[in-house]
Length: 121
Image 1 (spheres, rainbow, N blue to C red):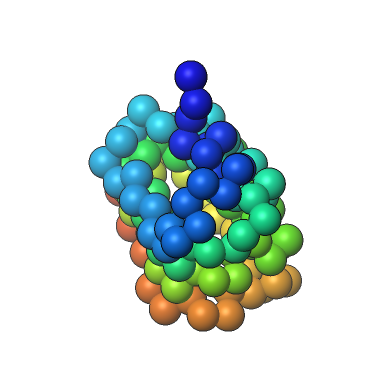
Image 2 (image 1 turned 45 degrees about the horizontal axis):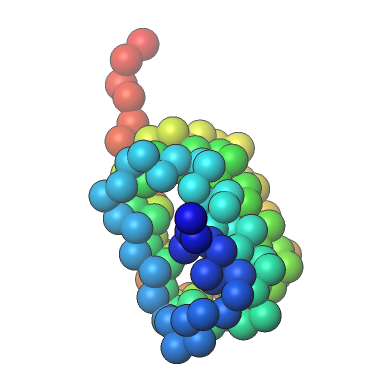
């Protein structure tokens, strides 16, 4: 069976500009890492919008995306959304921030990363 990641690797969607996986908590880090690998292997850097709100992503997924940023593979991204991924901890966010600082996202216009913080002692 062919997966979306496989299709992205083969550049089947040359006009694709937006990917939205919002509200699919079963994607988790495994799916985000697979997506990052596909985006790394594609010959095109075409995505302008990536919505990964509420996909169950943790530090492994955000580290894979940070690697893409560091390699310049997401330079066309204008919208980047990570809200509701409560598995993210400080280290993943720091990794992404370092990649952005090192390489930048030159046309980024919208970035959201809302998380629910626990107030338990």
